[in-house]
Length: 70
Image 1 (cartoon, rainbow, N blue to C red):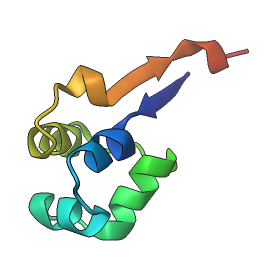
Image 2: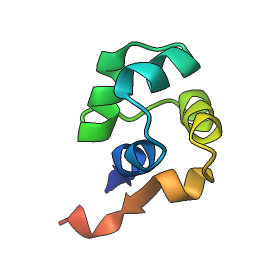
Image 3: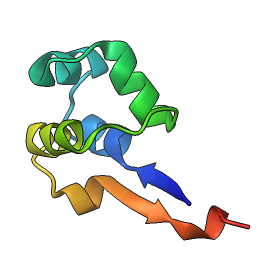
């Protein structure tokens, strides 16, 4: 099972840089990069902060991909 995300897509649609988004929620730009690449799954609190900052429902940002399981 893997968690997929649409953070990069939604962030770009809002014309936000990774740095601006990071600053808005109090994390490093590297954290945003890692989340967007799927290398880091944010805590529930951070996921809610991202959803709020991106004005997007949490379920539109993150989805569970169960097809990766073998």
